[in-house]
Length: 83
Image (cartoon, rainbow, N blue to C red):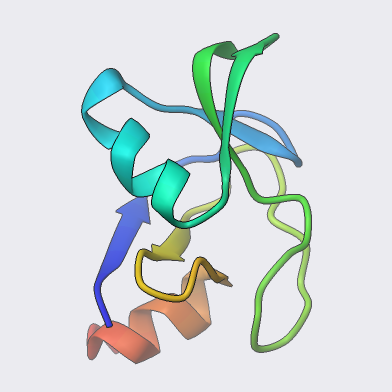
């Protein structure tokens, strides 16, 4: 499992990403283009795959690039061993 950490969500549903992350986001099934937050955005409106917690604006979250799952700061850090 490969996890990418996002320091702060732009909104409760989407976070802008750069062009370098579009392949990863597309493979994870989370890429949206032409969104209000920016040209490329990652969708995280379904919340944490472990606890269901919604990612709010400003929250740290993680993306599992293999499974396409999103994790809150607590569960993402735990999966990476950052605890």
